[in-house]
Figure 1 (spheres, helix red, strand yellow):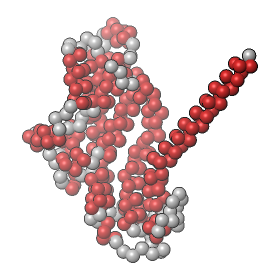
Figure 2 (cartoon, rainbow, N blue to C red):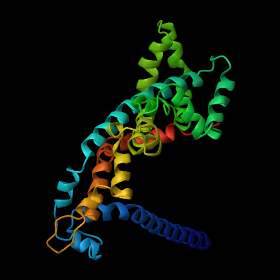
Figure 3 (spheres, one colour):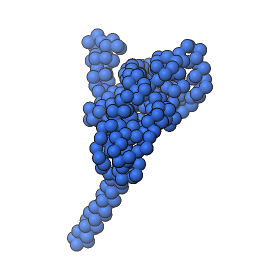
Figure 4 (cartoon, rainbow, N blue to C red):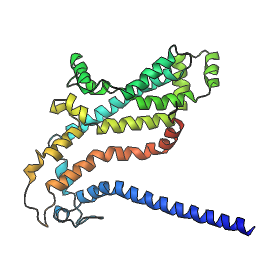
Length: 298
């Protein structure tokens, strides 16, 4: 009996040590990921004199909105915001239409050549044509420098198709048989039964697509050549990397200065990520459930 008690105590102590270590590691990892974002936020609200001198570390220093007032007056920022919203909304809707319909078709066992189509779909995730063939294809269809070129070219993400296909496969077949007995066709079954039962996975995949669309920079900078069509991320690159317009604000920074190119750049970064931060809490409750239920399987 004494040996068993000692063993239990040892197990509990080892569990406790394991729990403490994993939680400490978790806190450190969260801090490492979260701190750069937090620093950008507090620096954007602080006077530039303290930011440049390294006095801003964990909290605001001389709170000011001067950087944001200048950021909202930056050339093309509202146009870029509008373009990002348009591409995100219509791009995500297009993604969900293509992805859900393809995933539903691949999930049905009665689909002819189902194994071939599933293999072909997964194959495109591992092997792609490459950047130049895709660009030339868009050029041949006159989709360069158009919103729809940017939207349609990335209408499907294979990983998201697999997530939804796996989830659709887990829906009991009894639902489909009951719908068939009631006279429901494929489209009615899809819209009235499959989609309402898949809210968690749909919300998760929608979040994946929306974040990807909002943060999309590389292909937007290649496809959308006109400045009037470029999204916010392309504008950010010009402001932060090339500093074409921010250099106009270059001036000696004193303790009385309310803004500087550095703090304005931080303010623009905060403005650009704000929509995704505001949306995430509303979808977060579906996120964990959706990923678990739609887990990838062979």
